[in-house]
Amino acid sequence: MSGPILAIETSCDDSCAAVVADDGTVLSNVIASQGIHDRYGGVVPEIAARQHLHLLTPTIDTALEQAGLRLAQIERVAVTQGPGLIGALLIGVGQAKAIAAACSVPLVAVDHLQGHIAANFVEPDPFEPPFICLVASGGHTFLARVEDHASYETLGATLDDAAGEAFDKGARMLGLPFPGGPALEALAREGDETAFDFPTARNVKGFDFSFAGVKTSLLYMIADLGEDETERRRADLAASFQRAIVDALLTRLERALDASGLDRVAIGGGVAANGPLREKVEALGAVSHIPDRLLCTDNAAMIGVAARFLPDCSPDQALALDAYPSGSSR
Amino acid sequence: MTTGATVLAFDTATEATIVGLSVDGVLICERADRPSADERPRHAERLLMLCEEALEQAGVGWSDLSRIGVGVGPGTFTGLRIGVATARGLAQGLGVELVPVSTLEVLALQVRSISPEVRSAAVSDARRGEAFIAVWGADGSPEVAPAACRPGDLVEALFADGRPTLAAGAGALIFRAELEAGGIEVPADSSELHQVGGAALCQLAASGDPIGQEGLLPDYVREPDAEIALQSRSENQ
Ligand SMILES: [Zn+2]
Image (cartoon, rainbow over all chains, first blue to last red):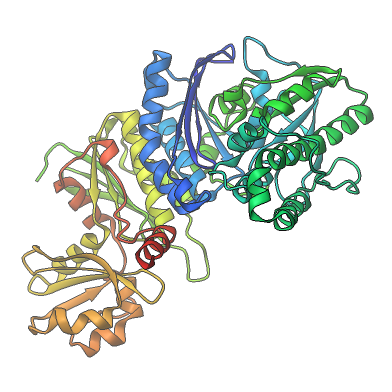
């Protein structure tokens, strides 16, 4: 292992840079949220890419400053290669490659999903494999069997929407602002989670997920209740909707634990910042690891920590590195 | 002109990836990746590789550079951002000067260097039936700032004075008929004037004014579609 790593993450709408020390300690973890997408009701790829170009340089400077380091003291550069919005990823990849070339240091290409798992490897409280990891966010939802620090096996994944996407869409139906997850969770605290029954893919077998149905049933319920009644019972609707999603995630997680014979479980991704999900994972009875909320949502520290366990690109690979979009793989 | 300057300049505003390296105003080498019509641009994969090849060919290292010039378009949004992000990263790592170069001005300068007595119209492909156009006088003074438009709409208003005008760039080939109908000369399809070249790129990079990293941004010319849609919605309310 070598000296400090500068990590860059631009896969969606947050411009992120972090510095991670040799031993896995996070020296800085800076997230510049673009905050401009609310007005469009969702992340607009072209606008996200333009914003990254504005925000990434000062974000990197701040991450170095907070770590008390100059760029010349960085010994590796890590960057999210994919999956994500291609135009957004290319900003991070382009800038990271150029910094690595200019500073004559190795480049490490990191898979974003591996990064979410690696949020569990952060010092001073790293979780050691093997374990089952649930990763759920606005862009992805899957269950992984993690046997070592550098790879994972996918046990199951969503067949349609991601869990975070379901949260966002449900929140929008209830008139909450984007991004919907945190707002829906706050509203749900005032409601009765058993008030309504929203089925979530009870007949999807194995370790796969489906969240398209739950948002349709919320839509029908809102139509049935009518405007006034919906308004009066918004908190109950939010609480019941949240419970449906969280229970669907937990059911698959429990199945995976049973089938694997492992009793160690971790979570990651933006939805892992959800309070009820965190509580229920802790209550599963397995040895659990729940990262700080700041390490669950997109961030660069998790990319830097993942890079500690990954090989450097060869010099030619580093110069030619391209990003890969959602839906493709390495 | 600058002296003692080692300038690396690149442009990713068109389908091509172009890199030039000059020392004391003399082009030392040029590297280019020009995809054929059925190929996708390869800016991300090729740009830094071509830079490294140019440095090697010139026998200089990254730390010998005094200035980096980057084509800021207008052109393909993704290509422009790859160029700007790369330039910013290099400047962060090397502490060198950064100079934005108008891609259209590169095309115009190439026209002037061959035909010094004509006005030059730089016309690149803006898709959607439009071109990015800017016009410079024979003396190099800017006459029309970069804009996205249909050349046919522009020709009459712009070139009514009958001054000899030569149009170059990929857009000039697409809109050849409209331009020629307005009395504007368009060189043969095979002419190098239609392609961004390393020499003019380096020349403008060497003579341009440096700016701070955070000020270096693409000249998009066009707003994002989502923004246009939002504005037209609020105007209609
Ligand atoms: Zn993510």
